[in-house]
Image (cartoon, rainbow, N blue to C red):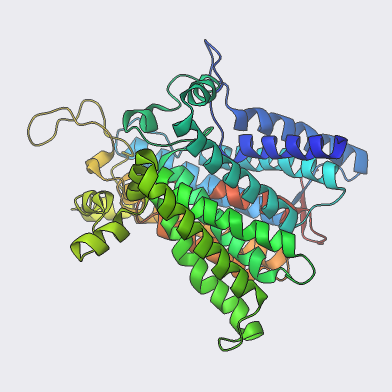
Amino acid sequence: MIRAVTILLAGLVTSFFLFPFNLPVTGITVNTKMILAVIGAALLVYDKIRSGEGLTLSRDFFVLSVLCAGISIWSFCVTVFNHTADYVFAKYVVSVWVWLAAAYAVVWLIRAVHGKVSVEIVGGYLIAVCTFQCVLAYSMTVWPALCSFVDSLMGEGEMFMSAAENRMHGLGAALDPAGLRFSATLVLITYLTARNDFDLKPFRGFAYIISFLVIAIIGNMIARTTTVGILASVPLYIVLKWPVDGILRPGKSWWIIGGSLLAVVLVSVWFYGRSEQFRDNLRFGFEGFFSLVEKGRWEVRSNETLKGMIVWPETLKTWVIGDGFFDNPQDMPDRFGQVAEGYYKKTDIGYLRFLFYFGGIGLLGMIAAFSLMTFTCIRRLDGHALLFLTLLLVNFVGWLKVSSDIIMVFAPFLILAYQSVSKCTYSTT
């Protein structure tokens, strides 16, 4: 009983980390991620003192910090040169440190509960949290009282985007940021499912598959960016399983996946014909598939909107160092004389927003930072290269649509990597 409670507690803390939200505290902004970061920093100092290591830092962490500090300094210089006040990336290195400190608290708690920590255990918690968020989000559409209660836990303004668009949301999980995290989690599920021995651990394999289907379906109802994870998962599973099972002799996992998929399709068809709410959400989440069947062409409204957001820099200066704007300045009218709102140049495409903000140099810095995170995990966590390369791909594909990233997915694994046995340390003493 006590173990079950501690596991649930660790899961709740992981949710507060993966999907942080402002608490309803008046006068100040208190974010769950920030609280965990403070706790994580304190635990790090405590662990260092208790172990007698002194304040030593992983060399990989030091290199990542230098790179992110470079991005921050470059962002500050760009805003100064362009005479703007948009310093959103001038504190990027601090943002990375906060995510890593919060991840340290999560990993520390998971280790305390299980006595050990690994890629599989951390991945299991991320999967459980995303599955919970999807179930919660759909339950909130069925029970308005539950929706009111969950929304009351979050600070003012936290749900403005999903509320304005009448979109499904969970506890801090909404729109494309949630979609990218769901995509990364689908890749995790696929990877762990392919490595799972269904003969020895059939229940775990079945749980992975059910979680995948729940996130793939309901996650798309929350944010269609979840499709990125589905598309990345199919070739990943084939690459991992084909050398083992072959295509002509499918293993037990293929039959379980096929049976589970058939069951979910039948249940979805049943609900589609009996629940208008389910039908509307399903049509929204899989709009492209319905358009293909009904109109003979793939058509998604958000993709059509995205096409209108393709706006390229017009000067060499913008290509190189950007214009220093991430969001539209409130005093900059558009060509019709109206005050612009939202994103600079009215584009939400991640790569273009980076280009317009701090140019190609800043964009290359961001690409280098996430590449460094990936190869740190590959080098220090042996045997998981394909997982982290696929996660990097999800992040880069996500930037084709939004500027959000999945650093919160990389962060717990980076903590594992930094704590792995290595002689590569940088001492601050």
